[in-house]
Image (tube, rainbow, N blue to C red; front, side, top):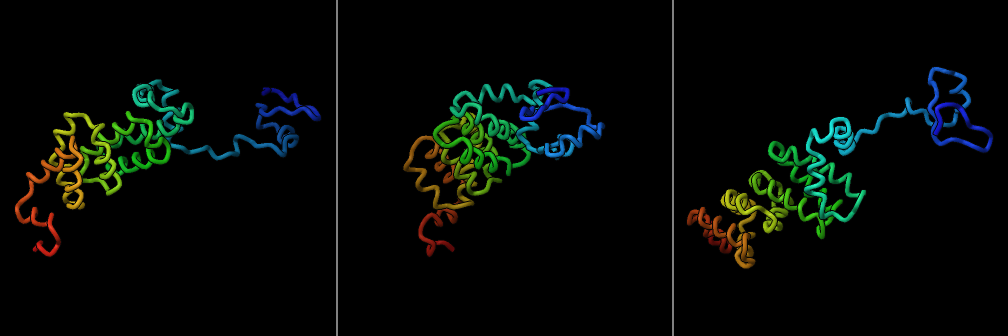
Length: 208
């Protein structure tokens, strides 16, 4: 790297910072990339990172990385998806689709065998929005109920049970067989149902 033209035949600098107004300089370096001519890279995760550099922890990114990134084994490769997850987490309460995006991010970027804290974060947010989730996100919440805080689980058991019933009544029966929080959700759901709704747990010909 140099701030003056020090390139010679056979010896080139990868990066030189030179006056852009000097036409002779531009003519000499006709085959290089001019930074001013390059369209800035637009990336949501990069915005998160640069915002944090400009104003340290203004958005809570650093605390988030320490809290959520501790059980991720991907090292530096995990930084980008964690920045994206932090960005999405700020929209969990106002934009349920962000939960679906986070579920997909966990599946494709962080995997199911690690990032337990990150999975718990999304599951806790998802159960609070159960009635507004699409199918994949609802299945994610059901599959990760063991990671949901006890208080959050108790407060949202009825709404989750109702959401499962409204989406697919047949999903309630297997929950009884698993025990733990899933059985509790199924019991809450059945306790909310009317008799005519309960009949629909049986073959369709019995439903009117």
